[in-house]
Length: 234
Ligand code: CDP
Image (cartoon, rainbow, N blue to C red; front, side, top):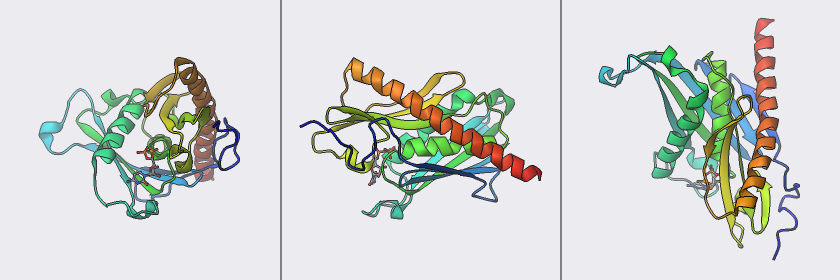
């Protein structure tokens, strides 16, 4: 059977409603919230600050240390608290997807600590985390070549769609999830993961859809940051 109508009525290339906010964690050097549908990510940045223990310090460049976590109450079936293989993997790919826009050589011997907490999860949490994190890094005043915007694309049954929700990910005829991170100014993909199967043609279609989605998210990121800094200047 073909997937002719999305469960929540969206068009195939339509993402869920988005919202963004800067400065949600007052004591952090930079912070942001990004919401897409029911998925909510909060990111907090501390640093650059001296890296301890000292033997980990690199005099030629700093490190971006990311910690992704999903709160126990973020999903209906309580998630076991604490780190997991999944959270380690997401922390790693998040740092890798953000590193290309940073110039860590500006921060010798230092660490930029990035914490991502998912307070509500309905698929696409790593993407929401990356989008929030990139705003939090900018809010912290870290020099960046660009922001990174992130969205998941994929296939539900036979249809290429943007921003799958959990119900779609669990479609009985199968789903393919392709989390993407993209730097709209440099036009570089900084993350591409693929869980499932797609043809070359479908992948191309999905990537085009992801670019469009990321560009939309980018506009919201820029506007939210500009509005925040304008407000601070008053
Ligand atoms: O969240 P994301 O799509 O980046 O990663 P995933 O590992 O593909 O997880 C997909 C979704 O499954 C999450 O967004 C949650 O809604 C759900 N999930 C869950 O209910 N319990 C977990 N322990 C992990 C994920």
